[in-house]
Image (tube, rainbow, N blue to C red; front, side, top):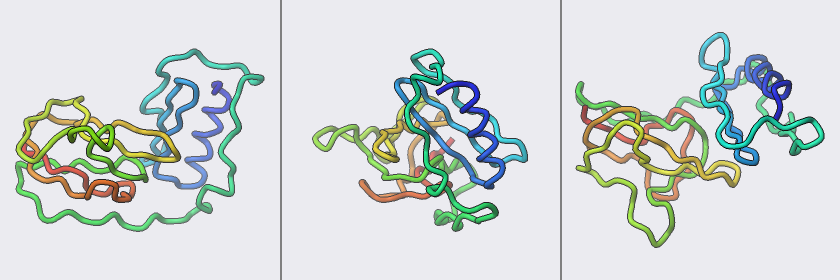
Length: 162
């Protein structure tokens, strides 16, 4: 993915009113969130260097994006959380997995102490496994989705007591 394509993607996110998009190609991972008036690159490049136009993978077809001005469905709400509980929400749409493989132990259980940056789950989106990391230190008090359940952008995943 080259800089021109990233800038075009940022423009598309802004033009379409998309809440966010995450793309990974050949070791390069880009996540753009359009929550603010100006989208910004949240995660830039992991792994390989920028590629020239001749080395690019096919782009996402525009018909796969929602029409301009479309509003996403409101995320499912978590039960009322105590004031000292932080609710981690899904950064993307996909399938929620509690463990790295079907025969592995879960990343975390209710009652586990977690640190900021610790992997809590995986969300599979478009055949990519996205590790979701804790954004706070604390103790896991709630795990809202079931394993292998589809989750929406902004849907509650974990309640973490801080």
